[in-house]
Length: 417
Image (tube, rainbow, N blue to C red; front, side):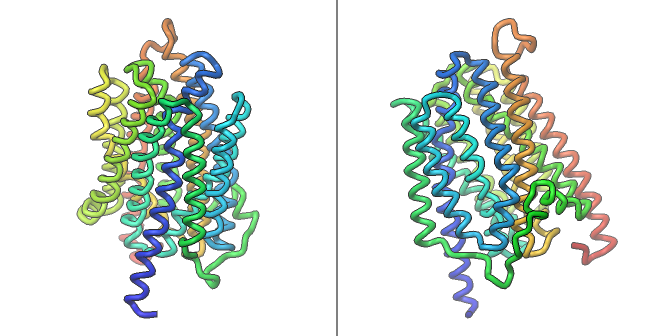
């Protein structure tokens, strides 16, 4: 195969996975502005809806914790393409189920199915590791992050607009987009993992505990796994309480929430699609990761304090630096394992994220429920954001410390993996 042909194949694969990821994330983003409000219609209370929404997010994350290492290991044996396609088809069916849900139990079932099918995000990152050289993975993961951000620009904005016609309308649109992603992937998405590089499926690696053992292999790898956990723990303050918080404190409805989330997506696209390359080239992966975590911490703290909606919107600017952290974190971790273990690594990473996703929404949903109503034990509804800012600051400190330890190891053993 000529170098020109390999370059064209690589670019085509990047385009295919980018578009597939965008379609998938648009479908997920559409329901964000309306799901908490649909829950509120069922339960009749803003504060109680915060707790129930936290439970639903935790159910979704629990399924990811159980299923992500299984799906990651299956992709190591059977390839990335079939896993991505099955996920798209499963999400389409799931959104139809939630669109017709008559009560909370049906919505809960829908979130469980969504958690299972969304576990294929591990495969998307493994796909990128398959087709990208180790030294270029931070930029490649930045492109995937930009795809996710682009999806969250279109998704919430479209969901907020469709939500004006009823809280169930966005679910039907999400089902249609997931179906389009399946058809698109079926027609154009190439396989990235050749048969000679595949690893046989093993339950020892595919169970959540077995997958997490991989993260203990190296000091930096386990330390970065802690950073990964804290990052996702802080992030779920948005999925657990943001929509309800914005309605309570600023009077924002689905349209305003959708437009704000679209703005967040635009900033993420700029950071992960354009800014991360020059920053990592100048600073390196580890300092860039710490910078992103520190900037995100400042932004979230300002969001919790913001007395007006305008101040909350301005706080999005420092918070956008958070987008520097995830791609560089992923790049640092992928360098510590072999090519035949990338799927297992991403499954383990998703398991860590899922543990955070189980605990964090329950925690932040509870914090919001005891701070949102009049006479609540905690007197300020933004306390959940203050706590999340502290968690992210702790992640930045640990990331800096782990980087120092890893640098010492590399100085002592230049060829250390």
